[in-house]
Image 1 (tube, rainbow over the protein chains, first blue to last red):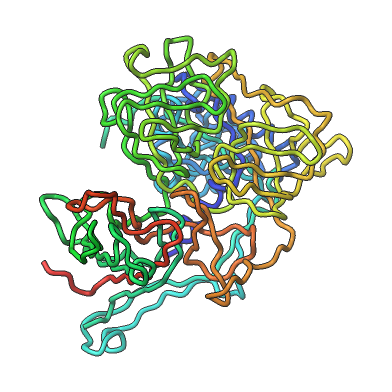
Image 2 (cartoon, rainbow over the protein chains, first blue to last red):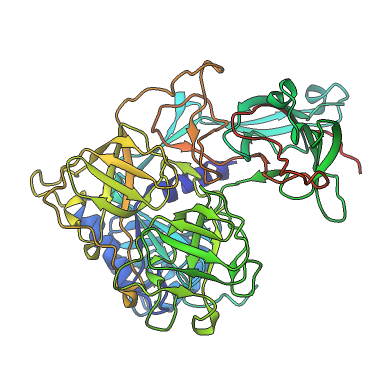
Length: 207
Length: 390
């Protein structure tokens, strides 16, 4: 039932945050696919704007195939971009299984590039066929800690409502199942959020 | 047996031949009465119309109407296309059909002008206030108008096969574009059906009038209100980088913001006035180089806050009126289904409901008989029934 809240906050960020079109990729589109320079640019922009990073870094350990992880902002991205992230392995992308320890990695965390740690979701916003060359445009908000807030009005939070058939209709035929929540969103520091728009390097090839 | 039926009613004064009604549900039956035409009978006018989602006539979903015909007699007729229909904006961006070489509109061309005019071979079907987005505007591999591809533009319909967009393409780096002659006939546009999912929203700047105060022209309305606090993001190639929030050379670390002091009444040439003295700033440059389009970054204005400008003013009717938004359908503001809100506050603008289209009567073709006309007072009922058979 929390998904509805997430979707509303997602669209709010897409609609309200300023955008950076990726230009570091090689597909010749606008925006391009994600290149490592895009991660560098967006992190630099947020650093210059004195945004707070979400996570402190992870110190390197003596373990094969791992590397230290920088302190980082969070980027929310589509699962459809995971192939592109994998393509950046060796160029700056570090899968979360290559962290020295993934104890601090979130369940949806795919990896990191420089100062950006990437969370992926199938519900990430995509504008189909909206790029200059007619390809799908992915919205990847990169957030500093103080960028947005979510307010549960009057501490109401969310209610899961269930009424069994006896109470839902005079013929007791149908039950009622619903969620109800009272919330507000606010961008508390607009300079600490950037929406990094990108396309994909290549097609997914179907399921 | 009405456990889950939904019913709604309302009225409005028409501002044209189309009207969008937002509802908290998707109706399967709609009926409306044109009070103005009932009160004062006029030849070739609609008194009543009704529509059912399940009524199909050879694949068409027509609207039934009761009209005064060309001799003033009351007769029944239908509107076969573009009558009453439903819409559901959902939470994601949705687009109309892709219009390109070989599609229903035939070819289309974009000329070099301010504002740029698009000419289609066949009727484009757009109304003023609709929003379109272009793709693949490469006349050749090195010329064309790719610089404006990917930008949502509000259109002004200037004819059945022509419309304009608020952008100056009459500049040296733009080459006239035509899908009939472009390499491999590339080039397309499509309508953005519900461009304002949330309001207000980030907007792309088409021009800046450097003055005190400053006038900002937008490619589509951003649902700003007077009192809105805004920030600017101008990549260096667009010139006026002094507007960028940071770095602030006067007060380090403090973002540079402005307040909206006026919003244009026109939704097809949208502008806002911002209380920033930009007289001495670098000129805005939309003459971007064609070759720069991969990864090109657009100039934006972003809503960041609000002074307390209060709720939406009471103008009769509901005591606590819903916020009104432009939502990319037509050129008037629409009431949302949301409760009372503060002007300029962020608001969920996703919507569903029904549209009264501008389709004309199918039999009585002596004049273009449409359901509503400017200044008509119209009452409507909308239902979503528990059971619909079959």
